[in-house]
Image (cartoon, rainbow, N blue to C red):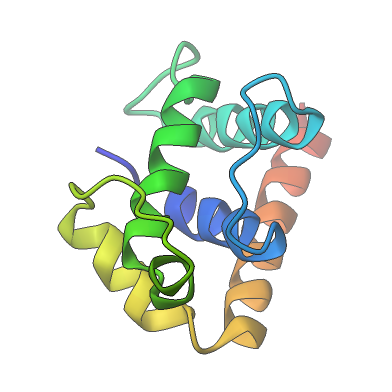
Length: 118
């Protein structure tokens, strides 16, 4: 399952890209996959082989699109199987971008601090 922190970073990506879902080869998708891999290194239960494949990031972005009324009004559907935590994160942050960016920044800072220790 995706963690709350992973979903916050992924929703921030979705919002920053205005609901557009880039290809798995897009540099921003590659960068997000790298960030999520670094985040997973902080979770000792997952170990060093954890992280998210770029294709699973695209899938999660499509889940967020399915929750996005603006995307639906433009005829973009996304995937209909968004999970409970996906919905909670969407409901908590989709109308509070300032808080989303604040929490995403705190997560990235935590990752950066961990990198500095190694």
